Amino acid sequence: MGSCGYLGSPNISGGDKMKKTICFYFQVHQPYRLRQYRFFDIGKSDYYFDDFANRNFLERIAERCYLPMNRLMLDLITSHKGAFKVAFSISGIALQQFEENSPQVLKSFQALAQTGNVEFLAETYAHSLASLVSEEEFRSQVLHHAHTVERLFGVQPVTFRNTELIYSDAIGATVADMGYQTMLAEGAKHILGWKSPHYLYTNPVNPKLKLLLRNFNLSDDIAFRFSNREWERWPLTADKFVGWLSAIDKEDEIVNLFMDYETFGEHQSISTGIFEFMRHLPGAILKQGDFELLTPAEAAVKHQPISMLHTPFATSWADEERDVSAWIGNELQNEAITKLYALEEAVKEVNDPQLFSRFRYLQASDHFYYMCTKFFSDGAVHKYFNPYNTPYEAFINYMNVISDFQIRLDKTNK
Image (cartoon, rainbow, N blue to C red; front, side, top):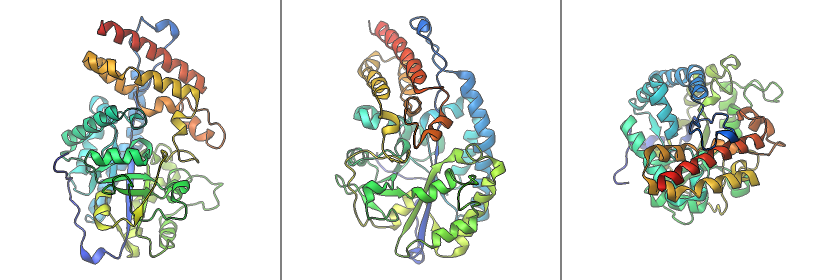
C-alpha cells in the first residue's frame, strides 16, 4: 500500500490516555438491484438491473438519511470544535451510484472528509463475499475500492472493514498482508468467551493486525430497538445511553458502536426521534468527562492490544448466530455463489469492461441475502430488506441472470 494516511492523522495527547474511547462507525451501501428477469429473457436481453428502482431507492434514502444525517454530522463536528469524530465505510458500488445519480450526496460526504474528523475505511468494492470464496478477487476489489476512496476523498484508507464485518483468522491475515494494520470485527460471544469486546486484540496469524470489536448490544439498542415500544428500556435518551456507557467496567478501554447509516431516517424514521437522539448523544458523552470520541485509526494508535483473538471460522454482525449463514447457509445460496465465481477466470480473460462491471455488481452480498431461508429467529429482519416474496424467487431470478451472463461471456470468449 505504500504510505497511508487520512485527513486528520491520529494525534492523541498524553492527557487523554485515561479516558475511555467511544468509536462510531457507519456502513453505507446500496446494491444494483436486479429487475424481474424471466427464463424467457435468457439469451435475449442483457438488461439485468432495475434502474428505476435503484434511482428511487437512492433518492428516497438520500432524502431521509444521507443528506440530513451528513448535515447533522457536519453540525456536530463544528459545534464540538473537532471533539466529535466518526468513520464511514462506503461500498464502491454505492459511491458509483452517488456519482451517477446523486452527486449532492457525494458532495456532502466530501464536505465531511474536508473537516479532518472523519475516517473513510477500506472494504470490498462490490460489498461482496469474495473474502470467503476468492482471495484474488478479494484483493482486487479492495485495491479498486481504496483507489476510489482516494480519488473521491483525497485520502488513502488505513483501516479495513470487510463486508458485513465478516472476519476470520485467514481473512485477517490476508488484510494484514495488503498493508492494513487495523480491522473491524464483530464482538461475537462464541469467539470472545469470557473476554470483553472493550479492548484491542490481534490476529493470531499476523499479530501486526489490530482488531476493533463491535459492542453489539449497545449498537443494536440504537440500530434495532430504538423505536420498539415493547422494549423494556424504551424510550432511549442520550443521557440514558451515556449512563449505560458509564456503567461499563472502568478498566475497559474502548466501546465500538458500529451500525448501518440507514438506521437514521430509513430503518428508524425521523418521527421516532432518532435524529434528535444522535444530535444530543456526542455532547452527552463528552460532557460526562470520562470519554473521548476517536476514529478507528486513532483508537488503534492510542490503545495496545491485550491478546490474540482466535477466530477459526468466519464471523459477521448478522443475525443471532453472528456467522455467515445469512449468505451461504443453504443450498440455494451455495449453488448461486459457486456458479458466479466459477466465471471469475473467464471474466478476467475477456477484458470486457461492461462484463467485468456486471460481474462485480452480481457479487453484492444482498443478492445472496435475499435467498436466505432463516425465517425463524431472524425472519423479520430478512423480510424487511427483501424485495422478493420468497427466497426461491430470489434464487430463480438470480440464476436466470447468471445463465444469460454466462452465454454472453462464452460468446465474447469465442
